[in-house]
Image (cartoon, rainbow over all chains, first blue to last red; front, side, top):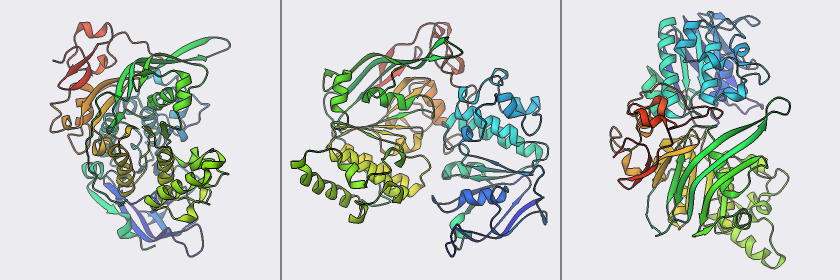
Length: 203
Length: 325
């Protein structure tokens, strides 16, 4: 299965393009890195791929078909700040099972402890919340993960723990991952291939 | 300033520490449900020393309470905070009264982001701050000088914070510390989300300050950034500093590092082994008797679970561990 973005152009103002004719293709089971300077449009591209931003030119397709809206999106986005991606007034177990009932197996592979489920989001650290965000996004319908700087805010040990879990799971489930990061060392370690946004963006 | 500067580390060592922090603990009292009150301990038995001419990095994960250390030194904690222990600045005790006198002058804070600037005040006015009429002109000249050095053009003076780009904002924040010829500069997470070019530029500003004789405390979660410019690295874990290591100790497999946590952190970096140890940092409401790293430690023994290990000096570095020698 292929996630393809073709001729993507995006800008907030007329004649001021952030992205211009960007092409990107991600296959199932592939781990692809994306590097770019601050403000070069990495996060915008992530939002376009995962259906959060709809006001763009070009096409995003899954095996040549447009991704339907209004139903579970097979392309799931993980954010840099998990504390902003959870409802602060819900307990963790409700947040976790928001999209699908998360299996015990998945909880174990992310190292999510039983007693965390009864806590509020502000009672967990960023790294712990990020595990919940990942487990929540890995529903049965998920085919691609877009990871936008997801371990930038955690310490190196937590970063290694989280990526170890992700790599195992995506290999098992044959999920494609786009890894966005400033950290070249991390990208080199994780990814089969690396794209520089400045090379594919003519805007 | 060059944008992609090779960062040079010069060392001008003072004899005595400019700032000494001895065994401080910090807790907050909070109301949970109704009138029930609980104590949350965020910093416990933390000791460190900052020297003039040196950059000391305090490295720990986000949200672990590192910023509160900065707030404790500046005396800007909220009223429900309880601080114990001792701090000394220039050999004299740093009381709340003295903190209030020194902060903004000799002790400066460089905040994380442009959000800390007043959105309705012009840049030059807030960098200069509140000054007497007679020294106004002098300060204005000084500000222009510093801005010029950081490549901030004269139209920046009259801008508002929202008109600055990320890189410009960073330089403005650094300038505020230089205005008062501060002796101790505390930078709180100045680098997250910066690309390599901006990151190196920002870091070079701090190295520059230390080379001019300041003591710089760089609070960050990014150990790689810290390694680029620091002289010493203090490893912050679960509210305390487990080790204060010299920069040269971070090499190869980390065999020169003293604490097992520091070694694990080093080996978890993607450019090293990218190897994770199991477990999590203890939560702030967990009461731990003994070493904070006990649960995850590979070299623990039974007396590690009782009583906090003493701070020891080993190979010119400090460590809180029973089982190193």
